[in-house]
Image (cartoon, rainbow, N blue to C red):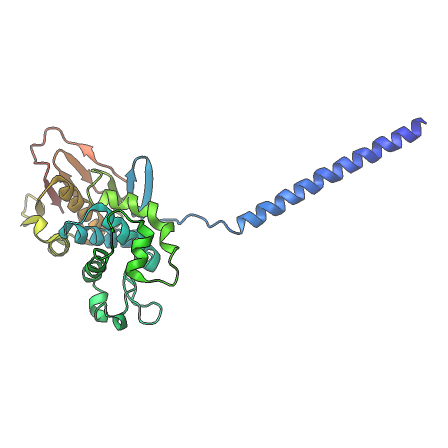
Length: 294
């Protein structure tokens, strides 16, 4: 009898072990299956820009940051609300990864993959981010209720994509960046500047003027033996001043910007840290004025 009981106990233990093993194997299989649908988050070089809004962060490469700044600047020139920037960014994320591509499906080109054959402009025009952003907004503002309608819906009404729901995945990220770059959330944009180009105030001045038009007055001051070159930006309102400041930050690597100030806040470029905005309470600079230093 004892031997029989012992045998049954051993058999029960073996069965229990086999069940545990089966559960573990099943869980591992489910994990591997689920992992096949998971995509690792993108990595960024030491140089990058970030929007931090309401505790959420969105990151761009320097190339993406320059293009995003142009999209935001053109919207500001046209007196469009930040939602327009969100729509533009969500669209450009999906169409080009926010890169000014010289290729695409059929004859599609540029940030928004606009097609010359569909009347968006010549290839040369479409490859100009200022032009392509403007053309996008030209059509966007004709969409009924674009100010309140679903962002993905508005993007699809403009683009007429074969993947109408694809824009939705970029909406949250686009909103964060739009809020920072439009100046809706002040001091929300920061960039790490690694290996910048030599100072080029003329290039930044031209870029700012093209993007913002008459919404800012840009006054350059050449460098002297004792002082670096600067551009003083007088904006029509505080939001535009913050937007233009974020534009200058985004172009820091390309044009050698070292400092930007808005009102009583300042930012300084650094290669080893994502420097943020700090208060400069002793400054008497107007809240609608931004100063860019090279």
